[in-house]
Image (cartoon, rainbow, N blue to C red; front, side, top):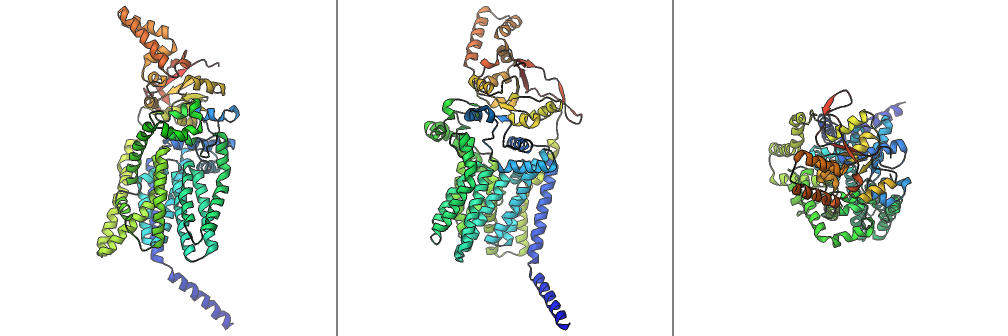
Length: 605
């Protein structure tokens, strides 16, 4: 009996000793800060979220709804370019632009809730934002210490650019989570090689390949991270062959099915229709006109590869503009107070070999990602992927400087508090003061207009310049306005004839040689496209101009119409009065905006 009692006391004392040896100070601070970040994020979301407004978030949401209801990866947004690429009416609704992982995650939440909603779509991106913040802490702790990890996580979690990405319903917080885990895996691989733990090193190489595959399934262009990582494993002389083979083999196996699917429907492009983004935002294809184009020359994948050479002047202008935008965006992703320290830290050699190795790898990964974001016109929100790396190295260098100065702990805490306040101020000011300015006004916006149409039980195919809104709110196919009459004919032959056209202020960004631009801006052109003879007759009767002027005006209008793309298909389309007010769900009423134009043709077609 005494032996049993003594054994139980020994076990109890051992457990007590283990508990006392735990780093309780670190645990309490970490749990407290992460909970505080989660609470602040919830307050920001509650104070500012009024439904999905980001066009990419709307696109993802309607794809997720298709996955939930139809159990297939399809879209309600019919892009003329994609329809021409597939060239099969049975598969014209295949989604070829957006990678599947994030929409499928949103669809899972929809299925769990029993219905699609704007809030559920945002919850997924917010969840991965929290995951990215926690992963930032872990990576910072592994590279340096828990203080660096915690301050870096705080900088990421309080950055308004990161929070806005989390509340937008887009996939970039998920991509940032995978990238942070990938960097952590590389660090663990390096330490395994240093310890000569061969099996563990190979396992980390395979895990890195899986994370690259997850990034590819989150955003197609992120497959580019495969190249610098392959170089890293190739120059690791201790285990070059085995780890490189493990990395490449697992990466190929994990990405091959989806890459094959993309290549099958886009004439060989493993990144899907995203490849055509290389021609977007150029003088040849302003904005995203390339997706509204059906020219045979534009459909050739080789054109994408040769475009930077063939249209070097147009392409270089795009590179300059996009580089400037991304450069300005980098300052905000981890806070203005952290970025300068991160920039200077590039010239400093840390004591941690793992930190120096990871920074060297970042020298390859980050410029390559920025280059891809520039070339393929990727949404600037993608920069939040880099926030953890910027925050970790910036805070590590900041704390190193504070330690070197040997300041009193009070001054150190005041300086750190100032850094945190500078980082959180943009988001905090939005919560405290900007919310009142975001409340809905008396005049509807385009999103609310389509919501009112859905509430009035309008469902059907529409041609519009905002198909992401129409597809999400109406739950029916929406054709992105074709750039030519040939494109309109192609869509009609594919089973999507043009009957209802809804134009918004988005048309103001279209080229002036497109009929959509003039029709949206001028009632005269709307009347002229419907019936040119009646329009001229009415103009002459009202204005009574001199005969010579009337003849010149008639000749000008006729020649101008011939030069407009897509004008021929609009003959007979009449403008409809959408009413002075619209009723929103819940009974609230809003005035019709002046910039929405509705045209209808022969609805019997």
